[in-house]
Image 1: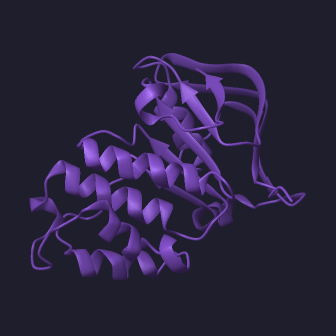
Image 2 (image 1 turned 45 degrees about the vertical axis):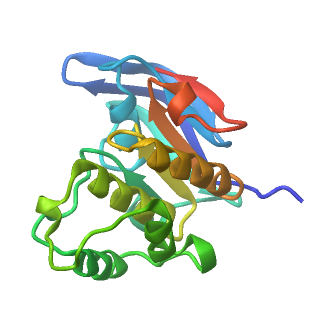
Length: 206
């Protein structure tokens, strides 16, 4: 039996980012794992920020629905997970402090998709005394992805997730995206579908 995924519904939606018009009177629905494609500067990240509830459209409506019920905007924080370069974690925290901080707001998935299991599988190796500000960009990316993929919720949003990952990291990412997309609405913004896309994804072009 197919899993019913959450869905975003945009109706007559207009979104600006500065002077750039990202969407104009647009109506679309994301009810299957989706790749948002577009060139740099076209509005992929702005669209993802809107889906995360961090950016409001100029006009029109955007709703998040799961099992026929609209999820209230104030509940998006615990329904939607995000990994993006512009969504950073406080740099003074260590790994254990970061996990404890994240755990105050979100619940880890059970079993092999728990964020601590994902961190181990990602190949992250860093001493717990080292603050995040001293981590490499690849280490921070692994942490961001593990937290987004390993948190309970209906939606996972990833913005150019392979950035700063080596070949092993990209292989790990692609495997996890294939798994998570089976029962969670996964939306990935990218301009490189071959590297950051995943099997069976629908396409939304910006």
